[in-house]
Picture (cartoon, rainbow, N blue to C red):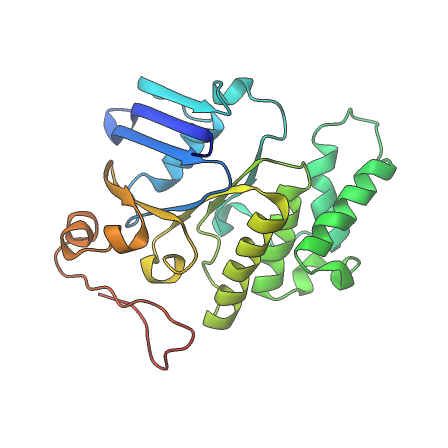
Length: 256
């Protein structure tokens, strides 16, 4: 069995007096793609923050690569926040957006060196955005912007990639291309990917496991095991149905 790179044991997290995560235990193995699914307000983003060490649990433990998140070496985790946390009007080109990740570890007056530039060019190649390297970031399509932001997250050479609702705002074709890119990155970099989503139908085609979260973890396992009517009802409510997204199926979709 592959080594565990992320472990949450009986984790409780609260904001003020409200419990956001309740007794959550979850392990993520090296090279795995796992999606945390659930409705808005279910604690998905908080779980990512706990993994990054930005939110300390008041009960339970979180470890990343065998140590507390804040003690993990710099660059262990690459992070793509929700779109609402990203300034898409940045007056910079694609190269400069990715370079931000390399500048984060430098002193005030340090400049990019050859290693930095080589790494930036390499991750842009991985996400197939080399030809847009000198384009204005704001001129890109939504799908292209997400690829550039993934490149920025990868620029530090992380072992783990955390993505918060990465496909929001993408059309069906761009969404499918984005998820296929994630599969390619997993293979080429042997990277572990944890992504938050509310779209079970889309992510179930590419993930190894789903974790169904609504304050507490209702189930985690393979998509086939997780997508029962009982599990969906406990997380999303009774008036929900599941239709698997299939690019080969005309008219397939999902809803409630």
